[in-house]
Structure formats: structure tokens, C-alpha cells
Length: 503
Image 1: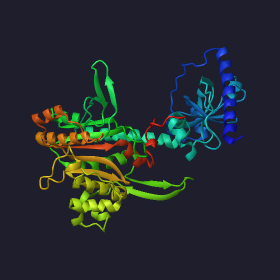
Image 2: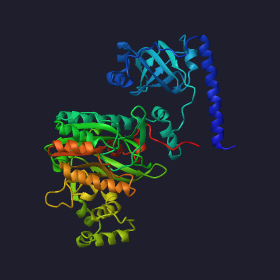
Image 3: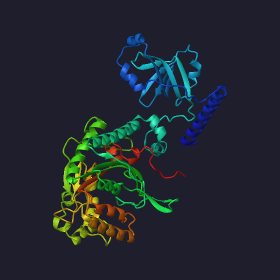
Image 4: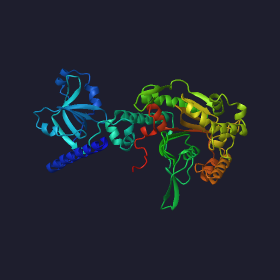
């Protein structure tokens, strides 16, 4: 018999035992009471009483009511875990409930009231005066919940992962702080938080394959949004000069360590600003967020082997100025064998791509070929915080052309740790230019590109009323949290990531 089968049989036996216990509790009365009210979290008790001596606590007789899940049993001691931390419970063997409490299992949710004392080892504990079983746990908690073999199960059963893994709790606490910090920074700088439609008649604001649905009452095809961009810029047209949305977007793309079909983005727009102002603001905001979430702008990312040993470390310091480099110059910087002359012509760029084994379509212009070379040879090497600027117009259908060079736009992407974190640009506010670019995108759709943009006539109408000079940006929250928490996969920072079905 395999170890896996043995574990399964043992688990089934334990579940059967617990169901028997639950049945007995039902016969005695209400098995799932809802009348216990805790008055203290464990971390607050540690803060308030942790420094006091054993004698001081006995004299103080500070009574506390705590509730949570039993994580361990050590003789007369139970280790209780709530959302804030852990504390021990102690039951005297002469207590009227001693036998009942002895029958409780690891995983059970209980409430207890009594004075807070300190053990000989210096640990706080609640001396149980009264206690109550609130929820019987029918499934035993895993003894070990780490290692590569359990990774998929952790994602599928995040509730168990959160119960037993403190590091996972930390990641999601940091994620919450990151979002709070972004919101605080922007509202402190007079940005208005707004909400825009999740279902759209025309999927716009990005190049991505959308999810398609159908609204029965309107008898109309609709799309889950791939980005809120065009709606947010409509609001700038309407007179809200500074707006932002922390939003969910949906893109019908593959799964990877950096892609989940449903993800969270920050998008913000600022009238009377350009992409250079946005880079300055982004640098300032990310510095603020790092200090809020981590207590410091210095942090590191690690690469580990299958055994969990660190084999590589990368240190970051967001207090230092971020590098700024154009797409063109970055290709030359990381590819010393490529000359500016070669990269500047369609024939030369296509020859470079051919040597690199990059497949190209006949429809690709010079700008698109340059971006393909950039993505192949540069992106993954942008480890330290870097703004890559001057993206070709061909791949930037919503960005403003550069005043001095119409081949490029006033656009940047922000990279760190080899990942794109943000995309921002001076917005295209020329309605006729925008209409023409939409028409070119429609030709791409006709040619079979499922990610090309649709023609949005209402957005063109909005631009015809007049969009002030504006700059806008999107930041991938999930990828930012991956960076700040040293998480190797987007699934580590999404509470319930999408998974392939189990067979």
C-alpha cells in the first residue's frame, strides 16, 4: 500500500471519529452556538500584557474573552489562533469542563474566558474559567502544508493554506496595505476614486482577448472589461481632472506565473500633466507604498531550489532614483552587437529578428519589430527599477505622438525584477488621429488578431468635445505585490486563483 493511500485511510478514519463526536454534541443540544462574543484579539493582549511579569498579571487579574481555532494541544494547554495571532489556553484538571475540553480536536473553533496569566517560560495564557465549542472541525488540519508537492492544493484550498501558513497570511495583509496606501496617496493628491462598468459593449483600453457574455434583456453581446481606460478618460472630458480606479480586469489569456485571467489594476489619469510628470509621480507613490507596506524601501527577492534553499538574491532600494531609458537605447545597451543603423530600418530590424529566431508577420512595421526584439532580449534583464520610454506609435494606439518624432509616442513602461509593473503615457487627445488609429486596429481584427482594439465611436465623440492634455497610467497590483512580498507566482498573491479542473 502506498503512503498516499495510507494517509487517505487515516484521514477518513479521523473524519469518521469527528463526525461521531459531532453527532453526540447534536444529541445534547445546539451543536453550532452563536452566543459567544470575544472582547480581545490575541495581538492586542500581547501588546498590552506581554511585558508584565507573572506576579503583576496575577495581581492585575485581567480577564479576557478570546475565540479562534485550536492549532495545537499540549497537555492542559491549547494553542488558540485568531486572525491576529496566537495565545495559549489553560484548563485546570479539576475544572468541571476539563473532560469536555480534553475531547476537543485540533481545528475546532472555540471561545474561552478567563484571567490572563504568564507561564514559567514567559508565554501568555488564558486560564479558562468558562469555554465553549463553537464549531466542530470535521477534517483534520494537515501536519505539513509546504513543499512543491502541495502547491496546487494550497491554491485550490486557500482556506486551509491561510489556517496553517503564517507566511501566506502576511502576504495578503501586505496586499491589503499596498492597496490602502495607493488609495491614500492618490486621495491625498486630490484624485477622485470612481467606478466604471465591468461589462462593456465594446472592449477597449488595451490590446487583449476579452471574455464574451450576453445580456438577455437587451439581447446584446457584452464583454467583461479588459481595462477601464476609455471610461476614465471620458470622465476627464467631463471635468474630473484627476481620477483613479482600483479595478478588476478580465483577459482571456493563458495561465502563467505572471498571468491570471482576472487581475487587479490601478488606473489613474491626470489632466494638464505629461508622461514625465507621471514617471515622477509613480516613483514617489511606489516609494510611499513600500514604506507603508514594508516599513522600508529596501527589500529583496529570492530564487529558491526545490528544497527551498536560496540560490539567488536580488536587492532593491526604492529610495534611489529609478533609471530611465528609451526602447531604442535599451536594445542597443543590452545587445552590443546590434548597431543603431541596423535597428533603424525595417530590413535591418527584420534581419536582427531573424537571427534571434523571432517569428514575424508580414504586417509588422518597424516599430512592432523593434518591440519584438525588445521583448526577446531586454525585458527580462530589467532587474532594477527602470522606466522604458519612447514606445513606437505602431504599438501604442492610445498614446500621444511625440512632438519631435512621430514614429514614437510619449509613453513609458515601468519594469522591475524583469517584470512589467506599469504602463503610462501622455494621452492622445486628437479625435481625428484616434479615429484613424482605431480604423487600423479594426483592420488587424479583420486579419485575425483577437487582441486588437475595436472601433469605439462614442469615445471618439467624447474626444470631439475636447479632452484636456492628460497623462494616464495603469499599474498591475498583483505584480507589485509579488515584488514586495518576494512571491514567485501571481497565484501566491491572488486569494483564489483560477485553476485547471481536477480530473
